Image (cartoon, rainbow, N blue to C red; front, side, top):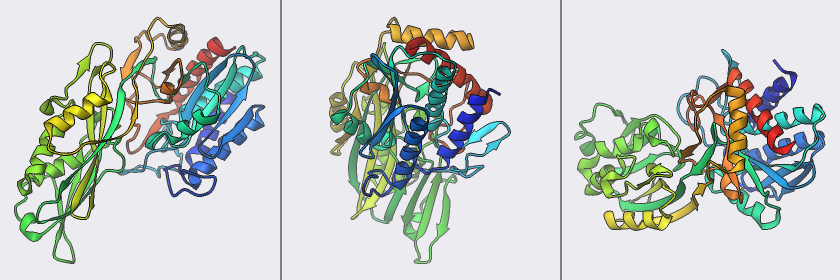
Length: 430
């Protein structure tokens, strides 16, 4: 194995070992001390290798080398919460049977570190940058993008670039993303419901506490029911986690739980019917277009507060529609007040653009794979750039474990990914 690749894997293990799930903010650490530690680690890595570095008030950081037009490579250090059953601890970065396990191995520490070391190898080989290469790494991508909002306030935006935070060969089109919240009363006999951790994760666990009367009426055999000391019962639904942009790849535990309890409330009937179809067909939300395909949705979170159930919904809409279109349809079709939360506007770059063709050429030279540019429902930092696309790290033949238990990358895929990024950065920046 190439020495640089070995160093990259070792560095990645160090970075995965830092728990960067968003936590309690403190001075200089707006997203918690784990993200602060990872930010310092990455800034130090770049500084030790000759990059000029800058800490953007703990929200994000960047490291730059070279001269000329500014080219950005944008990735994130934060990760989604841990869910499900793991073979190895999510922050152990264990290599087992040729696979590196850990939250962030694919999303997004792995590809970020891979790009850094691919650039270091080019510099070590004596190549001179023809552009200023700036690595920009945020700490809040998974839960709000406040990191990039802060970057925009004071920092120079690259003219073009890519984000290694999606799929190969090239993502030239990203659907719009808009989150919504809505509420409904909790029905009699249901004491609480708790499900999901983030709207952009398909919930793999949902729990209700109900009275004995309600428990006796539950007919589903797929639920786990346990008696509690206070005389009530917990009802647990297990699902399969997946990224919120690809809900069909998972099994939504919250939808299954609401369906099993639908006899308690007409609200549960309406909500189950509305969101059990991942494309919104049951509520006239099945929008689609030629450029980006069909809308997807994910009911990702439910919390109980003051006899009210509060839900969070993730919607990925086609690029020719707007977030206002989505909100209008939701409020027309269902008897709840849907409130828009954070959102990301769509992205589209022509397949004939030089940035796309250059990245495609680099990818094909390494892999000989002729898969054309693709559209995703996921949102990447590429949207921040005047001209940007997402580029890797998931290969077309690779099963993604992003946002899932046992997130991992095989060492062989890491080596191939390194070669692709090396060739792409060489072609565009040297």
